[in-house]
Amino acid sequence: MARKTHQIKKWLPCPLWDFAGLQDWLNEQAQAGYALEKWPGFWFIGRVIFRKDSSAVHARYCLDPIQEHFGIAKLREQEAGYQELGWHYVDKIQNYYAIYRCDDPQAPDLYTDLESLSWAMKKQVRIACLRLLFWLVWAAVLFQDEWPRLLHEREAVVMELILHSDVLIPLYAILLILILNALFHGINTLRGVRRIRARLRRGEQPIPRPRRYPEPLHNLVDWSLLGALVLYLGCLGLSGTMRTKTLSGPEEWAFPHVTLEEVLPAGATFQDYVHQGVLSSDTFDRSWLAPEQYDVAQGGMVRVGDAVQQETRLYQESVQTLSPTLAQGIYRGRVASQHRSLELYRLNWEKNAPYLHPSLPNAYGEFQEEALSYPGLDGLTRFISQVSNQTAPHTFYIGWADDRVFVLHCSGAVDSKAALELLVQRLAED
Image (cartoon, rainbow, N blue to C red; front, side, top):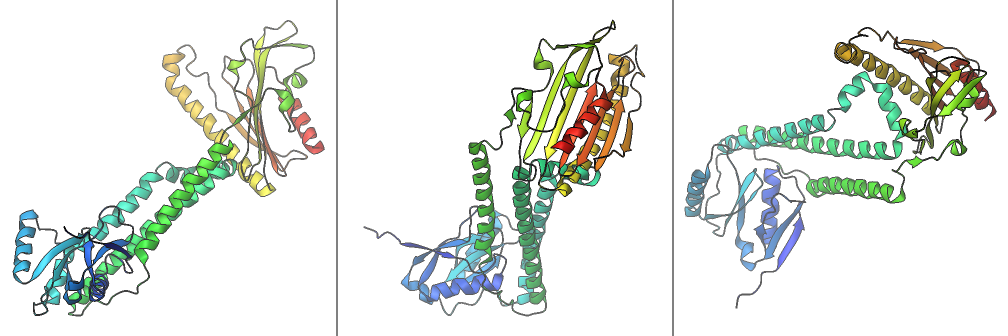
């Protein structure tokens, strides 16, 4: 009955591209009585499988660069030729090198001409280039939506990072480290293979690189970061941090605000919408950098005197950050986002008006944007937009005071100036 072979796994101390380092390490293991059992394939994490073999102390290992023009038949022919010289095929190191073993101390080395060895390594340079190109393309595709925004919507990107800092900052940080780790590994591999070829062309033996266990460390960084990301996002989901809290009404609005009834004209009668679903739900969110984020709305039908009832709505956003600098970042991002939103709405109207609104093809005019100076505020921007078939414009106030940013969106019969004045007063009292 055959005795079961005892496998021993050892960490690889040199990079995969290091021709001289790999060959020296395999021969050192052989002298210690360990024969190569198997070189891991796709799931290589830096550990190589050996077996205890007393005959290995007399063995030699040699690496043969896998050449790009070799097919299966040519490889089989080459293996047969090597076997006649006393070398038999053991395994391969990915697409870099084939590993051969010889137990005859008198057998000649596979390569005695260093220049021919340099030509044989042409494929290794191409593989290194393609892998580096793959990581560059992967990084470009992964952030294909972010690159244009970083160029044209930087303020909005900063705002989103602050508002969703507990999710986006760890996510982007881990992805960035993964990409940089992959690119550094790819660049180092390409430089290493080119350096080996250059020495071989000069007739010089390659120099083994320092044994710093780069492959295990590279994989350890990748898997640790991915594991940390999954664990962190899982903890956020279980704790409920990623879920938005829905508020029942103004009694839960624990921030400086105004109510719709307070900012209607004198003598106006107000009737809530029968179906409140026409308004977005009142919500509360939080993040590391912006621990208080409210988004609320009120609306209904308003009649002033004998006038016809008109739809009237009041939307409010309020964000409190950890510092005035963060609040300024949200203020700038909110202004930029509002500008872009109104511009897209205008373009969409102009595009579809001939089909959807044939009687009002030019009903949407240019929106107005104006930076205002207002006592008690560090920044204030007003947007006004109106469609000609509406009796009142939409007025947006975006303001910044110390560590708080607010948005007032007034439409219908709302007295927007009175709403702003009352809100600023309550900000000062807060």
